[in-house]
Length: 215
Image (cartoon, rainbow, N blue to C red; front, side):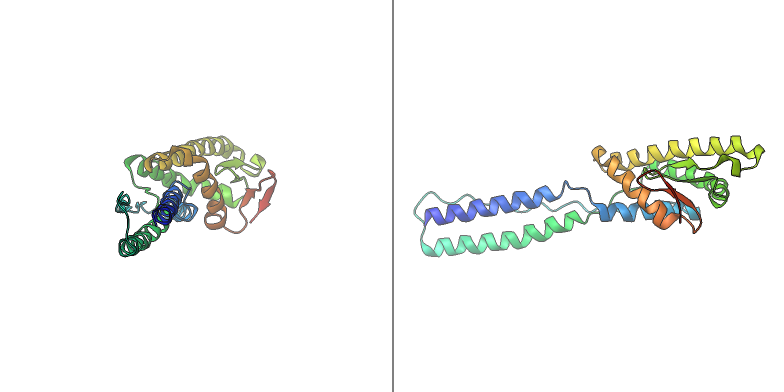
């Protein structure tokens, strides 16, 4: 009986550990929502608002098995307790994998406001095919000759300033969520959503091979 109970406890411990491990995975779905929120804000000129993230509920600890001999009745009760524990832990672990990314901080709002103020100028160069979006979430000059001569210095300045904001934005979101290691994944998601959600038909973007493609 003791051996059976030890096996059950070991299985539950492993399952709980695996559920908790899920929490450190990059939440791609939440990152897409955060990217869409900020992209819409930049394009429409609205304020970015962060999603509040409820703190995870700590599951009740597993009580160690008694050292005395265990009767079938006690074993049944322990089994019921373990089943209830799984009912609590597993849904919570899965819920936490669907967490929201927090995108509200003074730093993120300041970066977003800077991009908002610049976007109307960039937009006309996107429309003209002078610039395009890149696969690493930045902006690049596609054809400077498509811009009027007096605008070429402006294009270069706008691209440099916007790229500086974009680089800082991805890092700032990762830091805001206490996951600086997520910055490359956040950048990747933003790059995809800028093309899929932010780009208008006719805008150019670079594919993963570095080729310019028109949306």
